[in-house]
Image: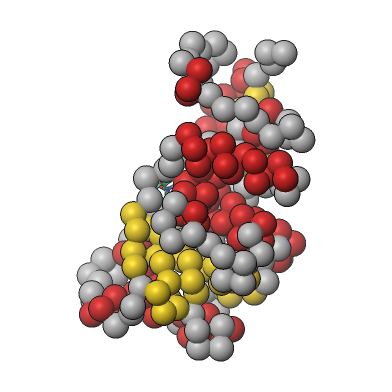
Length: 228
Ligand SMILES: NC(=O)c1ccc[n+]([C@@H]2O[C@H](COP(=O)([O-])OP(=O)(O)OC[C@H]3O[C@@H](n4cnc5c(N)ncnc54)[C@H](OP(=O)(O)O)[C@@H]3O)[C@@H](O)[C@H]2O)c1
C-alpha cells in the first residue's frame, strides 16, 4: 500500500516483532509469509531436515533464514561467488553455483549422501522443476512458489512420477502464518536483508532501482514519520 494513511479492519494488521525497525518489519508481509507458508503450511519442516533454496530473491533469503531458525540444513543455489558469500553469511550450509554446475541436482544428492532435500522452495518453476524432482528426498515436498526460470517449459512429468514426494502450490499465506512467523522472528532475533531504503519523496527512484534488478535484499520505501 503506497500511501501515508490507510484505514484497515483490525484483522488486516498484525503486531510487528519488538526488535525490528518499521522498515525491517515491512520486508516480511509478502515474501516472508509466503516462505513461512511453504515451510510450515503443508508437511512441516523438522529439525535436521534439508531445505533447498534457489537464488537470492526475497523468498529465497527468508527460506535460508527460516531454515536455520528451524534447525535444518540449508543448501542454496546462486549465480555468482559474491552472492554465494552473502548466502553463506546468512547461514546457508552449502552453496551451489548453478552457472558452474548446471546439473546442480547431482550436487544436492551428493551433499545429502543420496537422501535429497526434504523441502524445496521452488522459485524457478518450469526451468528448474525437473532438477527439483531429481533433488527431492523420499516423501519430500516441493513448494511451488515462483516462475523465474521460464526456459525449458516442457517438463517430463515422468521425473515427478519417479519421486515419492509431493508438490504444493503456494499463494502467499494468511494472517495466522504472519503471526506465527513474527513470533519466530522475534524469538530468533532474526532480521531481514535490506538492500536499500528510499524516502517516500523518492518513490520513482525506488521503483526504477528495483526494476533495474541490481539489488540483493529488500528495497524499502519509508515514510517521513511513524505512528506511535
Ligand atoms: N506464490 C507466492 O505466494 C509468491 C510470493 C512471493 C513471490 N512469488 C514469486 O516467487 C518468485 C521469486 O520472487 P522473489 O521476489 O523472492 O525473487 P526475485 O527478487 O525476483 O529473485 C531474483 C533472483 O532469483 C534468481 N533467479 C533469477 N532467474 C533465475 C533463474 N532462471 N534460475 C534460477 N534463479 C534465478 C536470481 O538470484 P541468483 O543470481 O542468486 O541466482 C535473482 O537475483 C517470483 O516468481 C515471484 O513472482 C510468489
